Amino acid sequence: MFKIKLSDVYRSYIACLNQQDWPKLEQFVDENVRYNDKQIGLSGYREMLEKDFREIPDLHFNIQLLVSDGHYIASRLSFDCSPKGKFLGLDINGKQVSFCENVFYEFHNKGKIIKVWSIIDKANIESQLQRIGR
Image 1 (cartoon, rainbow, N blue to C red):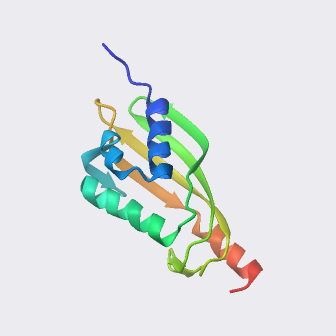
Image 2: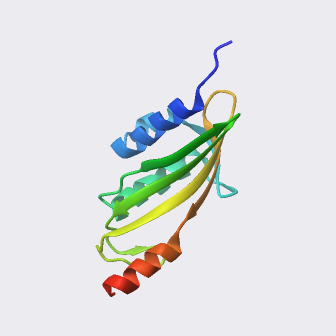
């Protein structure tokens, strides 16, 4: 039986995001994907990512930490970017900010993401905005 190495699949998924290769997204994400316990499906997931890239033109996903265990991936992603307007309810307006996202994925047997749990370090962004002045 062929065994999928999830860490390789995940790295390819992140490359897909960074290239904004949206037609290829279905190779990595299940049609019925859930995001933070909400059923959004592949089309909703793709819309969310496309919106992120519209609002953050220099968005780039950088893997800082990657742990794979069974059907799960845990990853710490870092970002250094300039959102155009509001981000997470904060007035960024093109200021350069750095932050991390801790994200957990569940993959099903066919190697596609079926569940995503994501937490972004909003407090770090708020602290940066206070230092650089709004």
